[in-house]
Structures are given as structure tokens and as C-alpha cells.
Length: 233
Image (cartoon, rainbow, N blue to C red):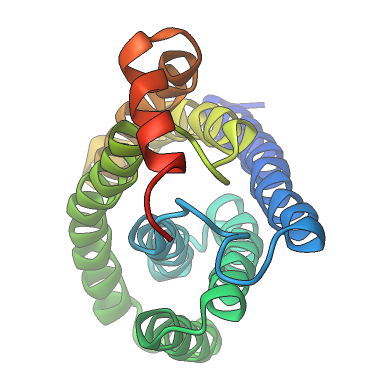
């Protein structure tokens, strides 16, 4: 087995492992919904951050079928991941029923529809698809930095991780590392967009994982958590 197939297989494995993290986040939301009133079950979950995560998986999905040869290692796992993160966006809308959550969910569904259409016509519009997906990956990389900054800011301000799930960050971080290795075997000419997004995502996950320790042991986090919990409703 060559390096390309080896790291492609490893990356696919870690993508599916990362999906357990997304499922863990979904289960946490479902558990909270059983005991917490509407509007609180998804507390501190940044819709900004999950929208960006959705776009990250989605842009990889498009990129995988736009390059030559068709990259099965990228396409199918990312399609599954896109659907699962879409389910989280649905749960956020169901819990909050805000205009912003509705428009985000509607946008996600439209992106998915056109992405699936593109999958069936990928060979016809391969050059256009690669250009669009590369642009989307770069934009998403910037949005990941901004989106996770928003999530990090919420944790720092409240001194709590709320409904944020640690396992999801851990599993996605492992996926990011394997994506970087896989992109290197593809060659920088083809794989550089994947590396840019994976490196950006990996850095943000390191910060999120550190904050889970910070909220447990930092006195300032305890003080902010008490202020947040005692705020007027």
C-alpha cells in the first residue's frame, strides 16, 4: 500500500472517529432536552461555530469530487459528517426557534441540495467545482478562526463550557492531524487547501480542549461562572 492509500485510509478512519464526537455532541443535546426547558438545551453552543464546521465538511465534500481522480477518501466521509453537523444545526433551531437559526438551517439545506446535484455532474463541471470548492475552503478557514473565536469567547466570558462537548473537539483534532498527513501525500499543488483548513481547525481545537481544563481549575473561571449563573433571567 502506497503512502497515498495508507494515509487516505487513516484519514477516513479518523473522520469516522470524529463522527463519534459529533454524535456525542448530539447525544448531549438530546440528554439536556429531557431535563432542561427549550432555549437552554443548546446553551453556549455557538451557531456561528457549527455553521462554519458544516461549511468545512461541505467544502471538502465538493473538493473531493472536483479533483482528478475522484477522491473517495474525502467525498463519502465528509458527506456523512455534513449530514451529522446539519442535524446539530437542526437541533439548535428546534431548541431556540430564532430567525438566525432558521436561516442558517435553510442555508445549510440549500448548500447540501446543490452539493448533491454537483456530485452527479462533477465530471462536467470539474474545473468550476474545484475553483468553487477551493475558494469555499479558504473562506471557511477564515470563518473557522472567527467562528471558534466566538465559541472561545463565550466560554471565557461565562467560565463554563455549557453544552459544548469535549469529545467532539478531541476526535476532530485527530482527524485534522490525519488530514494534514493525507494532504502531504497528495502533493502541495492539490492538497494545500486541505492543509490550510486542517491546520486552522487543529489550532482552534487545541484552544477549546485547554479551556475545558481552564474552567475546572482557574479561579477566574469559577468567579465568572458564578456571575453567569446568577445573572438576571
